[in-house]
Amino acid sequence: MDDRIFAKPQDQIVDFAFNEDVVGVFPDMIRRSVPGYELVIPMGGLIAARHMGTSGTAFDLGCSLGASSLALLAQCESPSVRLIAVDNSAAMIEQARHNIDDARVSFRCADLLATDVSGAKVVMLNFVLQFLPPQARAQLLGTIAAAMDPSGLLILSEKVQDEDARQQRFYDATHLAWKRANGYSDLEVSQKRQALENVMRVDSPQTHEQRLHAAGFADVVQWFHCMNWVSFAASPTQVLHAAN
Ligand code: GEK
Image (cartoon, rainbow, N blue to C red; front, top):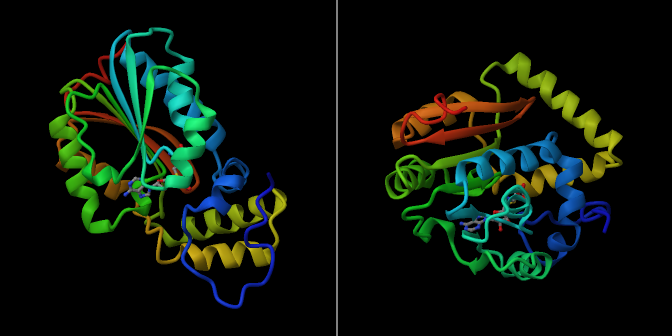
């Protein structure tokens, strides 16, 4: 279904929420709003699947409709792999359950901040940290680094803000042009921006990288960057640079 959520003028813009209305249009919304989404998800799934091998447990935290889970499973034939997909939006989890018919997956409607990822070989956090309270982010990453398999893999994808104001202006202008080219009106763009203002607070790529290291991820690779969208692969031990 086409995303028309912000197409009509709204008297009062309320904070963006991952409710039933958003679930119905989510694939269209994210594809038209996030440059690189259609590359980051399958490529992240491939990186994650190579790391999983033929056994172990993966977590898709903030799974929405399960695109990252599907991308990993598509590259992984082994029946011994387990995947736990977590989202605190009941509407999202219900639809994800409906979308994914794979006995290797279990779904949890839960707060990812309270999710135990002990022993995980892979943790995927795709476009989710940006919606968490900024003060909770370092602690979450520290908990994941300490709990996961020491040679496990974290995939972290995010919207970012560039530290260089001139560069950021170029990205803003290009993103606006891209959204217009994808059929969004100026009204839709501005109403959505207002709705996200209090909900999505983004960091710079440098903040992400420093925070990953401080949290206990010794090996960090930034493998994707397109304007204000980045993705990192990170591990508590130096396994990524040694990968072949
Ligand atoms: C994808 N990863 O397609 N606990 C659990 N879920 C949460 C929490 C929380 N505390 N906070 C937010 N969420 C997906 C896309 S969307 C990104 C992720 C976007 C969930 C929220 O309900 C929503 O489904 C998801 O994080 C963010 O690869 O819409 O830009």
